Length: 205
Ligand SMILES: Cc1cc2nc3c(=O)[nH]c(=O)nc-3n(C[C@H](O)[C@H](O)[C@H](O)COP(=O)(O)O)c2cc1C
Image (cartoon, rainbow, N blue to C red; front, side, top):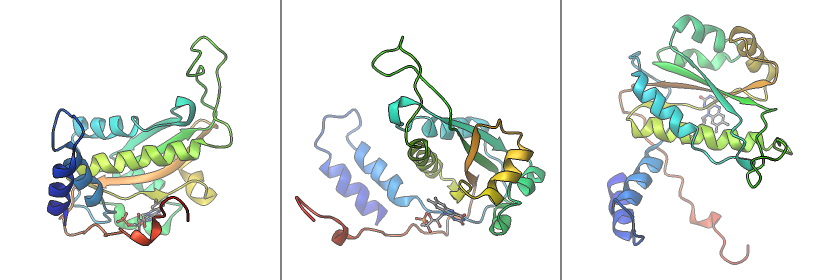
């Protein structure tokens, strides 16, 4: 299916672009992403981790606020503490790294159209949307490197967030949004085909 998607999108890329097959490669990567829950314990080279976080930081955000920060863990004794609030996390002990994706809910930036103007913060808790885009970008970069990851929920559950806030000494305005184990895996986990044409409506519902 992935090869077919690559051919299809490669062939259909009518836009002028530097790499004619860009659409095929990107679509193949998106369709190949899956939640991986079993790893072989190998560590992740820091250059790859940096690229993964560069992708995460490239996400769009409301008013360009970029509320994210990341705590990268590689020490398994720390995994135990970070997983403490979620009994389901044991299976992630062999991940090569755990990224705690954090949001500072009070981050401000100068307005996009007035760099000298008073700093603004995002209204209506839109930081949560920003963080979803950021986390998905991270997962796609992981997939692109042939690694596996699993988005695990943290915010808004106090029992999951509290041990993390405490053990990682997060500042009071910083929320641990998601915990993402990342690692090398045996490649047996298959992506799901979620295409459902009945979910699409043209012109009206
Ligand atoms: C907000 C969110 C929270 C999730 N929390 C967990 C979790 O706590 N534990 C887990 O194993 N998977 C978790 N997942 C992964 C989902 O179970 C997974 O994305 C879904 O089953 C679809 O499978 P796929 O990612 O392989 O396409 C979460 C995913 C999202 C987006």
